[in-house]
Image (cartoon, rainbow over all chains, first blue to last red):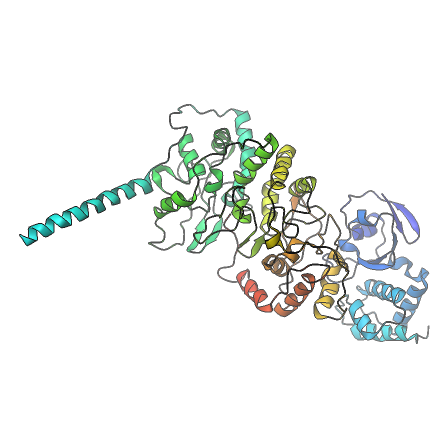
Length: 152
Length: 446
């Protein structure tokens, strides 16, 4: 089957029910997207499909054929994604960093749909888990992005 | 004189009692007739053994008579009953602990009538009120399989926990007299061969009604074939709600085509649902092994059972969600459920089932919705391969009131109208299904 990932077409040989995450990491070697829980609970595997955030560990690959997939590798090719990464650096969000590619994807998806999200909307969208507890830094970066105040 | 008259009167009273007691004793220990009684030679032709293996698959014998990872058919499965736990028995051809010494007639009486050699009555956890419908041919094949296709296991049976006098078996004969039919399946005139084959499997070997038909006060299935409206109308059973298999639009198979029923039984999933709860075992052990024409027959038969609009409520139609994002249930849904089941509730068919229009979100009984949220689903194993996607257990992650909130949201959104869930109901089922408790619901009366 053919997948479109980061504006590029890839021929993939996989069973229809293979999780998209396995295809991205194992078949295509793009390891920026992380495997966390495998049960859609943590969000480390978040990618964008047609601009919406999905958890790749519970996305059967057959369901995303013909759709535009974006992973962390290409997030900075997107204007919004570029702003998010800059804010993340500005606020020094990452600690161990394992969950952060997923956090950045979730933030990008939110801001693409809602450029100036309210606190409630941020709370509703930024639900990925972080074992280091970087939630305060994430919220500081998000508040700045929502207010258009980032310096980068 | 008075004394003599008294003795004579007493004699006239005692005599009928003695006669009645004698008749009762005969009735409750008698061995029912078997068409195989005079049969000396029994065939163990390999083709017959292999056909018997198929009948055993369709009848799902392994579900109760085997433990995972243990010797097949050596018994041991614990089943909770209101009186105490009982254990499925060793049905390997071992002569000491199994059924190796059974004649074909003995085997027939046990399977179709629930009577072991010597007249001892089996508990109706063994679904003989359904298996009585098995044809003579299938009984012979099944016997050949259990005698020659199963390895003997010298494993003793586990006695039941039921205390005396409740553990006396003879009263079951009276129960049988009232509730257990005695006739094998007879093809219904006016229906075609496919329908009749489906009726035979559903009512007989498939024993679908053991879970899906509601039970009466004496734990009897309220109907054993399509002549009774309660047949396969949905039943609450040990923490799961086995839904209607009739043509109910919301809670039954009204929206399923025959092809979708076949697909569900063959692959464990279709665009409406994925097997879960006790049905996972029925799929893993039985329905996926059924031949395509048998599955088509089942589908044809089930599609002929009318629904009951009064019970089923107003027909479900999809509606766009209108609840606020920060409503308690909506927020939990978005964070815990939406990745698989979709913010729109439509799921990712056929892999992850929709919750919009799901039986568990439309049935008044909410046990299945609570149970699967607390405990997740088991692995669906198709052709030896476990599935990639499973419902996780939220027992440790969500409180009773959080589960009540999210399920109330699911059961009240996208046109679903199953009704709100109370935190107390969640707490109750949490206790019953706690693997750490001394008496969790592990297995079920089938």
